[in-house]
Amino acid sequence: MTGELIIPHDAPIDLIRAAGGIVIRPLGGGRFEVACIFREARGDWTFPKGKLDLGESFEQAALREVLEETSMNCEVLRFVGTTNYTHRKGKPKIVAYYLMSVAGGEFTPNEEVDELVWLPLEQVREHLTWDRDQELFDLVVTMSEVRAQAS
Image (cartoon, rainbow, N blue to C red; front, side):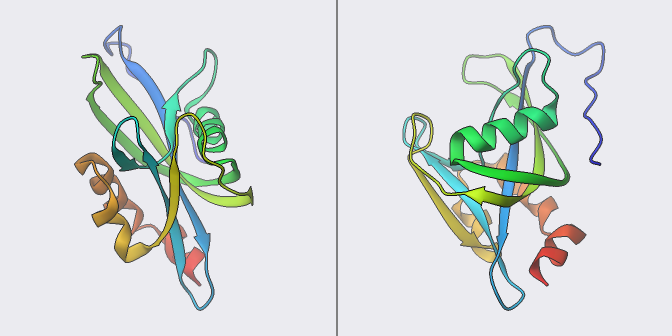
C-alpha cells in the first residue's frame, strides 16, 4: 500500500527512529481539516509522533502513536516524507510521516498531548511550532490524496 522506509546500513548507531501522522478529516463542501496537537511539556504545536517499538515498522508505529496521542483510529493514505534533526538529548532522529484519515475515535487529553485542534488547510502551517513540520506540511498540500479528500 504505502511501502516501507528503509534506513541505510551506515546510519548512526544511536539513530532514534520515530513515526507519526498528519491526520485529516473531511468537512462538507469540498473542504477538510488537519489535526495539530499541543504538548505543554514541550510548549509546541506539532503532529502526533513517537518512537518505534522493537520489531515495529514505521507505518505500524505511526498508526499506534497517533492512536495513543489522539485516541483516534486512522487509516494510512500514503507516505508523506521524513524529518531529520538532532533530538534534545543530542542524538540524531528520523521521523517518518504518513498522511492519515480518521476512521473513528475522539480526542482525549493524555500524558503526552494536552490539546488537539482541527484546523482548515490554510491555517495549519502558521500554527506549527517547528520549521521541519511546516516544510513537511508543504509536501502534504501538493498531494492528490489531499485534493481527493476535499472533494
